[in-house]
Length: 80
Image (tube, rainbow, N blue to C red; front, side, top):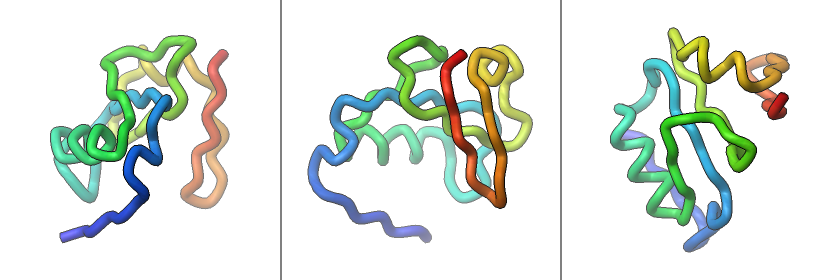
């Protein structure tokens, strides 16, 4: 089991989109964790999206809407 700790509402004001199969937890667990710390999880990429959580076989329609630079397990996401 993975334990996360963070300051209350440390993700407040940030919007996340989850796509694909996550390796370390179920999608609902990830959504609950993000919301626990004040983040908002939506189903589609928009101008309000701060982070795209990209799992294995992530949706092309979502990844096509952002520019992703992959460097050593780090994804830098910019809205296009």
